[in-house]
Picture 1 (tube, rainbow, N blue to C red):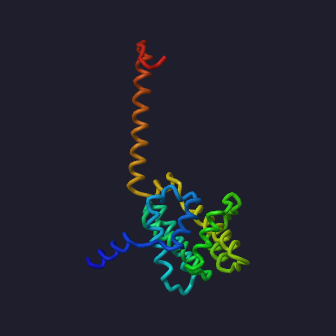
Picture 2: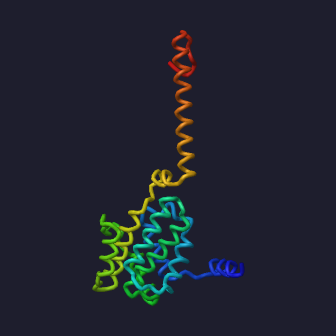
Length: 208
């Protein structure tokens, strides 16, 4: 109980890291942003905490967090998804030797970035992560561009489509099916009523 209270206090008073700001700045340009807007604070908090993690294998760790984010979004567990995304995006930075002292410069570069020039890749997540980990930037500007490119390529492959998420979320799927049944039943009722009215030579108001 005490631990929970302490975690709540930390979450309510924490100052986001530059890594958290960078993560959210990139996320705002992704397809997933609209459904994760309410969880920006969680993303920033998770990214900030991720900087303290000791990671033995960045390749498998990044892939694991991506898969967790994918599965969470698919089943509409958006708060969990936001947490995993924050961790993944921060660890992508940390894997390349990022320190918070670089944060202000990177943030400035991303804020001035020509987002229309960002190249997105359709490669599977494992290949994107492998490329990022093996990539050697020539300068900080190139680093910022490539980080954004790979991060957005990963984020845009998440199942953000509402219909797909409905089909994989039991309660929402049941409500969706129930609404479809109701529409079909209602439509059938009016069709039958109209047919009967026309067959009986009666003009039914609303149909001409």
